[in-house]
Image (cartoon, rainbow, N blue to C red):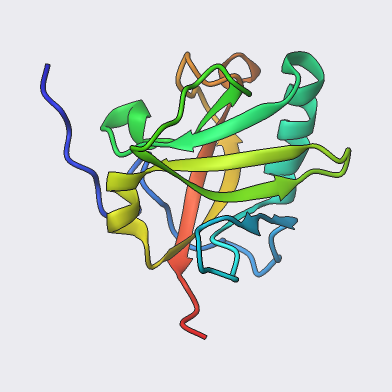
Length: 153
């Protein structure tokens, strides 16, 4: 089995897409979790938040992982908390404080982070079939990442 190289941010399918098509601010910013950082690296749109809340009613607490693989592996994957093991090869980018008081961690492979470390990510949702392993797949929706450069301030 060959390992795919991490992909640099771009508008390609599964990779970070273009900036928001509208000027609407993200609905929710994640609490920064990268040691030494104070600015949020991850946000989510209102549509993503609404879907996360519906999925949480079915699956309980959730988590996200963004890997550097090809195809579906480069899309943000949503799992029931604890169903995807993270370790030294992963970095916790941020934790969303959801309206119900639960935390929703957003992880990324460390290798992928090296390519995306100057990028702010916004979790969004679109119509379409996602990966069969991500809990939104049966909903006819898929999560995707929109990106922009981090503000250097």
